[in-house]
Length: 285
Image 1 (cartoon, rainbow, N blue to C red):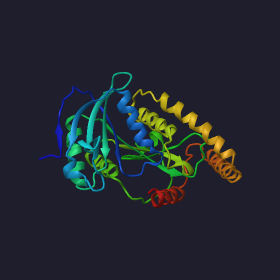
Image 2: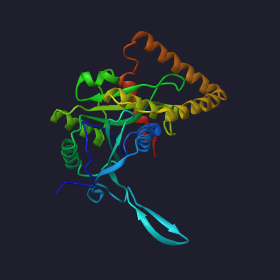
Image 3: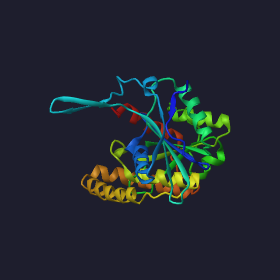
Image 4: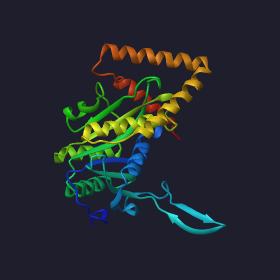
């Protein structure tokens, strides 16, 4: 028996699939923010659910108990859902969201691929975000992992070779490549000094990257406005501390130098990225 249950069978035409599974690297809650925005703005409906009884350790992902005047009125269990919506031009978009499975990754990936294959998915777009040595005063950057070099270059790329721990989205991406299904992992880079707080500007950048990679028309105006408001607040906070001013100034100089020297690739080196990711993983609790 597959790990999913189909609850609706909408008529689809070559949908794009966006994936954001909670529990792995999502600095600034950028992927979670992007997925929440897409679920709300695309007016989605439920297509399928996955069996979280088989996939999750509920001791680490506990249900939420609702208490009313001391009475247990029910539990809300974590769910992994596949939902369907449309972009601004009516193109089909599927969203796979929920907690990252704790177990049975290979089975989950195989079943997910069978499901999206039956639905005619044309491209898979996993989302994530990680801390990087960049300033909040410069445009954000999107790094990519993909099933082909051409797809990786469509939005952005990471220079050099890099070995990092993988999430289930990486396993899904690899399996897509084995089946000949295009997949592009989109990773927002978050200024390392704000990576523990919500960073809506990066969520907007992820949505813009999804639009470019999949040929969709999506509206991220609300997230961009929230990002601008946060930028003003961060400017005020930094200005009040001379050490912070010097740090941001140094990051700006490094960013601008890289942009000037390599206009086609403005991403930090693999070593820089690995250092920031390792630091974030150590401190995220």
